Image (tube, rainbow, N blue to C red):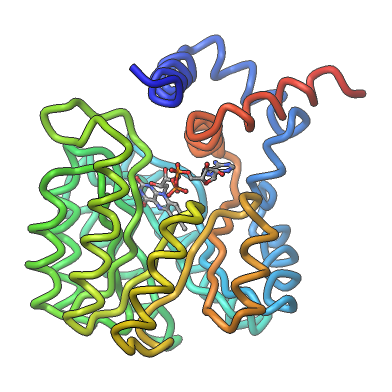
Length: 309
Ligand code: FAD
């Protein structure tokens, strides 16, 4: 097994350990999590968004949290997503909102989740804004697509879009199907620990599939967000859009807050749309663990900050 795969598996396994969870949740912000998280409150996040907007970067705001266990928590998560739209409007931020369906109660009751999702997309439409539904681990992919299709039909592609992962074998087919509905898609490689029965085990195949499905979606005239920090993917997208005369309105690059900030600004300078995913909130631990799992250097960075005052 390649080192990066082994690192990813190990970090995601260790991160699930209760003792580790408690320790990092208590000390993590001091240990360097704030490099990736805009703050624990929406107001702190709004400050960060304003600064990014001033540099020409677009933003999508995510109130971190996933897999809630009570109906009250799910409703509160939807209320918070709605509050993000209010704050975007109030401070005239150039931002939309990203959400996770397990945070809206998907694992408690899909209909409860749908009602919450419906309220959020309705608010997006009211403000002429947009909601992006993040994609989570493979057991919830189908139900996420099903709920997405319902809100897509009701509110339209200008107000709601979905994320799909190039590491899943099924994704090419999903892209073709959702392409027929005109869906706006964000393509990512995928951040969860998945078995070989559902996902390409080799990075090379995940990368190849990424380029393939981006090309399929762009060619069929649908909006595509290319969400990757991988320079090879970015270069290939640039080449493809140039060769196929694809207009700048039909795609954008997306990256995570705190990752490859220099490259983000470089793309803005080159005239591309570049959107930064800005997470905030108290439940930042699982999000943070996935960022460490993606890159050994991030783990080292956190270790170093352990020994700084
Ligand atoms: P990789 O092949 O992982 O990395 C390529 C290069 O990018 C690395 O060599 C390194 O230089 C740099 N890099 C990558 N990650 C990091 C990092 N964390 N820190 C520092 N440098 C890094 N996944 C989901 O499963 N569901 C989602 O809904 C989802 N939404 C996302 C939204 C956005 C805007 C982005 C950017 C990613 C999202 N992801 C999501 C995560 C994604 O699936 C990948 O896990 C993540 O983007 C790393 O893959 P990569 O394409 O950047 O390339």
